[in-house]
Length: 199
Image 1 (tube, rainbow, N blue to C red):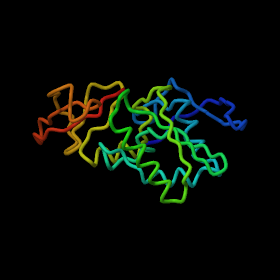
Image 2 (image 1 turned 120 degrees about the vertical axis):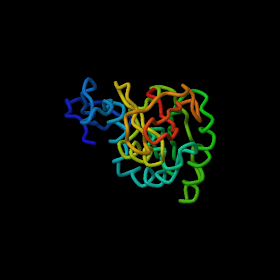
Image 3 (image 1 turned 135 degrees about the vertical axis):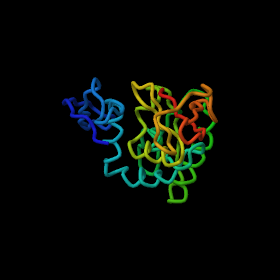
Image 4 (image 1 turned 45 degrees about the vertical axis):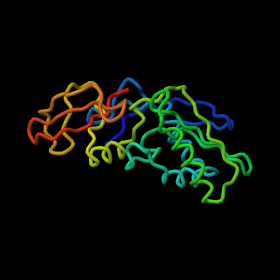
């Protein structure tokens, strides 16, 4: 999925580096996908920092315990990594307040970095800005669909079946296997499936 054309905007990071956060939040990605927020563009820029780039790659191994095909990067939960000498601080944002997966994710982050030789690790939980489904990567949406979960759809009342692709689907329950999912059924292949709700 191609990203939107961008409008120039620059901010200062904690390290006093100018970071281009080019984005026009009023537009959506090609194909009707979510708008790319300034916060999300900044996260992608942080990943390219040569001081922490290897750490982001290490944490690509850490997956969401509820959707194990999604890394915490693809889900948009992994927000920042800072390195001060030998100390690593990882910032994560829950998909919703009180999300029970955060404990497991924190432990998995610490374990992944420990295996790579980093003993001094802090995991910081932040609630602001609040997580949004706009932060799920395009690759993450495709992995979600292949796993049998319909990814969130912006500004659409149609939810396509992840099994057969039909738009002829119906809501069974606002609550699916977890709080952030709804339960749907396809009227063509007759399979029930989870839909990851827009947040």
